[in-house]
Length: 403
Image (tube, rainbow, N blue to C red; front, side):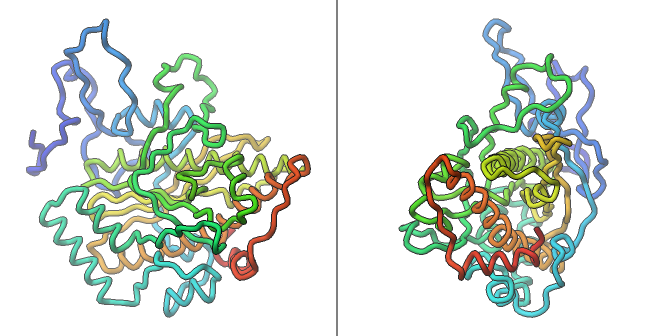
């Protein structure tokens, strides 16, 4: 079906005979003009299945009820804020000069392949040119995702021996299956005041999301003597990564933008809730009391791509007055287009700062909480500090990356 302007309407926006009497979907909207409260279009349901054999359809981020049925009962809120520069968000001086030197020498982060150097005008021009061509050609989602992962979302080589060299390092994982169900990886709970009448498809939502791309911390940062015990306190995937800090989702264009936002919101809330539980266990083990200062670093970041357009999101906890989980909010902190040179530079700055935060703030704080839990008096485990060339320097740079 072809909609207005000659754009093809996705199959899930085409009304069936049984749905024509229902209220219309929100339709296609531009990213910057979206109101604060919005809906998305839902896939059509099979109306030929007999009522006796029909099973409840699994709720999907594509559904126009996903916010009302999945996010809101768990108080996962989406806020469309104004764009800001990365250095303002993280409270650091505006970067001048070579990016690579800045992060590895001045900020105490590791030598890594993830750093992007936007002083290279040839690089910026190549990125904008490619995105313009991909949009003009109408290439599919896989092409956009492939190019972004090749040029912007880089990864470090994986270590074959995790215990040989201790260092803070990221690991990029693609479409990782990480379905909740174990004690160290739990789905965000319902926190709505009234959820007694909710259907099982809502209350038992599986959070089996498999985001397109995510950045995690490598277990290389942890001492071999207690690395095996990390999984007793927080989720470890593939025996090599833990404590994710950035989730990315791709869509071909803005007709699927809402589903990308929903996917990132749910996946980020899952990661953040379990980070919250780790902090809670650490404070219990140490006998320390909750303060709002101790929740400030409990964050996660998200990135949604719809063709050449991108949005960066910051997900933070909203604890209750007695410091129980009260949900979270996902704030849009920047938007841009990779068809524009200035936006490519902004995106590179944001990715660099998020990785710096992940390696010098998020990582050391996760390690501190884990060492507190593992080394509690009843366990008998002794935990050592990470070598001075990584943790001490990252602790110093934590101030500049924003706690």
